[in-house]
Length: 114
Image (cartoon, rainbow, N blue to C red; front, side, top):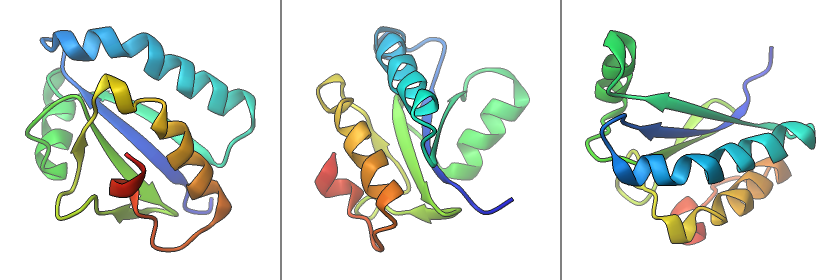
C-alpha cells in the first residue's frame, strides 16, 4: 500500500479541552472518509494504555490536544516542533491542511496554515 497522508490527533482522557474538541474532530474525520479523501484522520489517546503512552513518547508529544502531520508517510515538522497544540479556533484549518496534502504540494507549511 502506498504511503498515505495522515493528520494524527493526540489527546488524553483527563484533558477537558480534548473532550470539548472531540465532536468537531469526529466531524472532520467523517467528512474526510465520505469524500474518499487521500488523507487519513487518526485519533490517539496518549494517556490510555501502554501503546498510547509509548506512541506519545516516541512522537515527543508533551502537550495535548496536539496534531502531527504526515505527508506520504514523512513527518512534516511544524516550525521547529514535531507537533503543535491544537486550539479550538484553528480546528477548521485542519480541513485546509488536508486539502493541501491531497494536492501533492511539496514542503507543506503546516505552521502557516494553523
